[in-house]
Length: 324
Image (cartoon, rainbow, N blue to C red):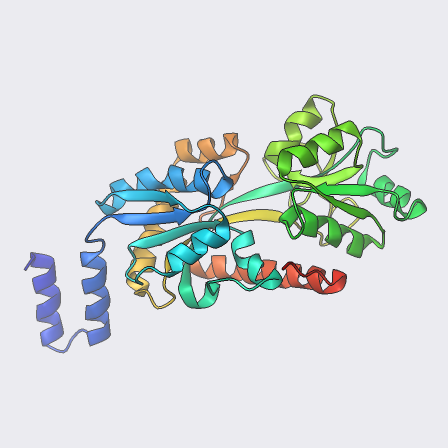
């Protein structure tokens, strides 16, 4: 028995430490006892990028190898992770679609039952952009123009039910405009359609939109965060530019498998990952990729998810969206 464990046991035997506290201390001291997996979606995607940055940091902090496993889509990754024991040795890095999917279709996992939030790691700020052919230079001008040509403006997205699709629907709902959604097979075709003028507007993350805006291929009108973002310097927000309260951001967070995982394990992983991502060199690495560091508590992450679910649910109900 190590000196620390002996001391805790001695205090517990004297009745000075509640048995539950001893269990927590014991769990945190022993964790992890083997390698830790981070299950995420396909290689090359946003959640995979985040997972591969934090894995070496957690390896050093936890003293056990932390290995990233890719499982295709977010749904497949969620299903694979949910089957693992709730002992803290399986983590999941997932984006917002992970908790939004269940609003659109039946999923093989339950976020509340099968996972415990650890930390909201990063957020991606979206940008409302328009084709150069659209006669508008501000959000107010775009809305005014859209109202004069109901049903004539098209907006692109990488697919039905995607974050950017729902953002476009929310924009229509909050501005009383009518536009047509045109889904594409992925981000790049949807952005290419915007640049070519095949569609007139779109909402995509800053990392994808801003290089084209700086090159003059399209117009970036406003960021979709509530507050100005370092990712879009000099750009106003949609909320400040005429649609109060409009918000559409991408979120990527860390979960531990099993909602009943020991709170001490969740706390340990949270402390280590937040400490790591807040290192200046790590923060800079994320910023260069077009994402902002958050590093929240589990409670803050839960609150952010609940707000996102509530906001998205309203849009889905309004448009009667259902994906089979």
